[in-house]
Amino acid sequence: MATIIDVAKLAGVSPTTVSFVLNGKGEERNIPLKTCRRIEQAMSTLHYQPNMSARRLRSHDSNKPVVAFFWPMNYLIHIMTMIINGLLNKLNTMNFPCEFVVQTYENDHIDSSTALLIRSEYHAAIIGCASQRDIDYIDSISLNLPLIFVNRISKRYSYVAVDIKKMVRIAAEMFAHKGYRSVGILTSSHSYYASDLRVKYFLEASCELGLSIEDRYVIRTANSLREGFQGMERYLTLSGRPHGLFCNSDMIALGALAACRSHGVSIPRDMEIISVELMDPQFVEYSWPPLTTVSMPTGELSGRIMESIIDALRQKKTLNVQEFCEPEVFIRESFKP
Image 1 (cartoon, helix red, strand yellow):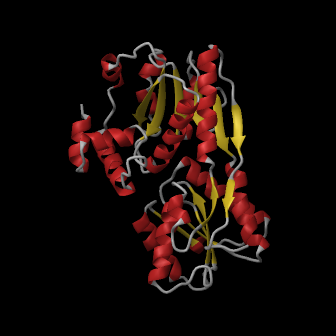
Image 2 (image 1 turned 90 degrees about the vertical axis):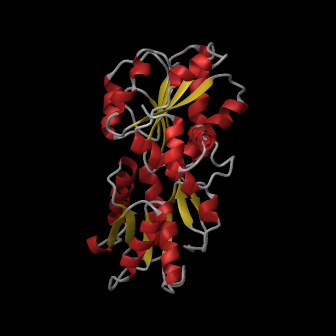
Image 3 (image 1 turned 30 degrees about the horizontal axis):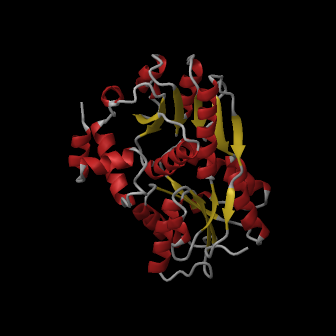
């Protein structure tokens, strides 16, 4: 079984750096995003699973409630870090002593990582980034503990989510209100629950608003800066390409901005871009030009989740929360209303 030392060796970092990233302190410790991504890849390659039982035995606070945060080891580690920071900030604000552990799992196979949940060795659970298959599995089992999904809809358990349909409709309306009749899309080639929904709902909203989106103007690429750059290069070669572009993630959008600069395309004079914001806001606020975004309010979402968990544990009551957070819009230089 892989250890944190094995992960550190493969990622070319210290075990302490791996620990900081696992516990959501990457930003606080100024760990570069590219380093976090190397650590994530190393965990995935080694199928690393933190030994939570051993960690609890070493702890002098074994009587504290244990709150488990489930997250798949994939390219969304930057979102994981932001959500963990929000959860821990709320823990500190509410002065709630507990042990907070990160439990990794593989998308579509969360059933392989829920033994401790079923044995009730955790006192509460937060499920992040679940696929539909993962949601269906959790909904199919009975768990005697507070459990809440992050930005996913469950038929049986609690959730706090952003209204994805409303979020991307705002972007479509911004293009339509400015007089665009067609737009392009730059999105991930990886089939992923939330990403696929954003594209689906953006296409639906665009159709309702009279925006034309031809298949050839939908560019699919990997969710990285490099692939965003290359995807935009492909888009720029298309004849008759729309001058309005919707980017399904800020990671892709930042690469697209770099490609535009490299090819002498001025933003927003020659092209206007609206992106979904998933990363720390400083990455898009200080890009060049700064990106106009529609955003998931990560701080509000994670704070409300932890607040609900703490209330349920303190009051020893059933958790019953179904809430939607309002998406946020940030107008910056890449798109001017």
